[in-house]
Length: 223
Image (tube, rainbow, N blue to C red; front, top):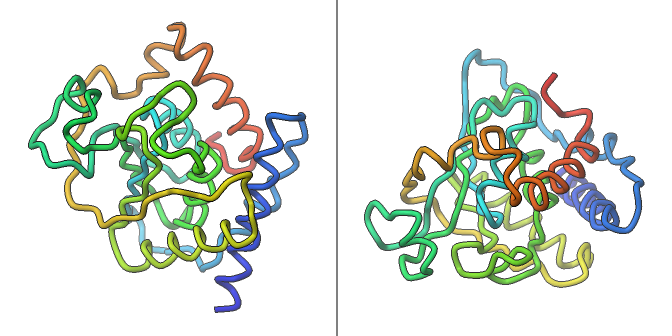
């Protein structure tokens, strides 16, 4: 219990520091992030787990999580809705109930779920309901789809602690729901930033987020 509280406090500090990134160039967060690994690494070879996050446009989320050492693969898709096999066009109408999400497949021997939570809450603004910047609609909501009770417990505990300590300028509104179904998005959405880096959205929206993300997590990036 004490260790969980310690981890939550460090996550709060990380979030507070990151929120200041837009104001200055102080990115001395590597130690805080490194200290967030609260459990012994899993030694089973080739074991992977899955985390599912919605943090606004999945192009941004995918590009950021792809940077982390221990993340094996990131897939963009749709979760949390009621329409079977939704298309991107349908999801964008906001009528299917889905959120744009990323399935993050990771090696727990190299990166923990705690660290992925830290990345999640710093890669977007979790205080804006159904909006990230100019991207507005329920499909852009901040959400965690947990795959097991451990993920649920940790996500809820950290959210509570962030709000308790006023880590952000507003309350964290991130929804935390059980994972049910993931529909992989169309092929042209996969690896979007790497394939379309010169496009205006990539240049003016994704790239600035990615640069800040890399500075915050510089000790956790892939070589």
